[in-house]
Length: 295
Image 1 (cartoon, rainbow, N blue to C red):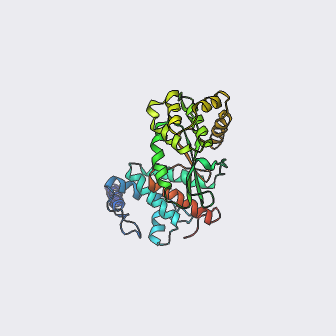
Image 2 (cartoon, rainbow, N blue to C red):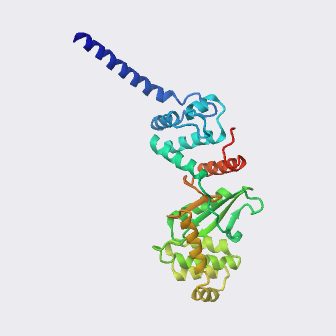
Image 3 (cartoon, rainbow, N blue to C red):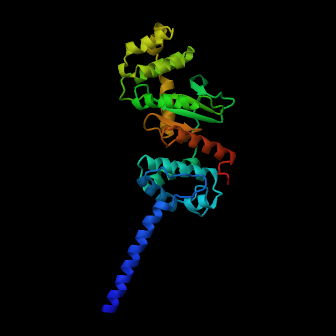
């Protein structure tokens, strides 16, 4: 019995020592990673990120963990971006499990069929159709507060980019009483060459939206309100609005704003860093003929 007790005690001590070593290692695993400096991450984020890097595999298909791939020094660009994205997510408070799930969902979008949206150049900003390699399609509702918050971020993001354009697609929600009329106003303004002036005006007036407000925005843009009223009475834009909503629903839109990158559902946040990651990944994926280049 005494022999068994001593053996059991040694096993317990070994297990406790292993646990302590694992905990200490979790805090040091992020040190000396080529091209990365995580020294400023708070301790909780470091712990979660170290778990991600030791649990998740290389994003370009190698039989290595993210950590081993980065330490090896020849990780593909996509893998390096996923490590940076993981760090950003843990810094925002996401757990390791949540980060791994989000990375998995993001990576899966590349292998899924792409939506083919009908693009109207008059509702696009940024690069021209001739030079754009990436088209962002945003399904939006003029009474959606999240759309209002996303608008300046997205418009600022595409400024000065020669290969990225942002295209608006209407998706008026039934619970917003004036969103359909606002969508019709935007399309009416588009046909008159004043889309962006009215688009911006509608978002700026979101908190006071009404039929009178919408007509006032059209008047301010120099448009014929009587002609607009006739177009509304004739249901001129109803079919187009419905077609846009149907296209969005078929692609999986279930809320606004919903963003698509060359027809691929965008599942990250609207921070410039995340958007840049998605654009760079999209360009690499296309360059690799729908696969990740090795480096």
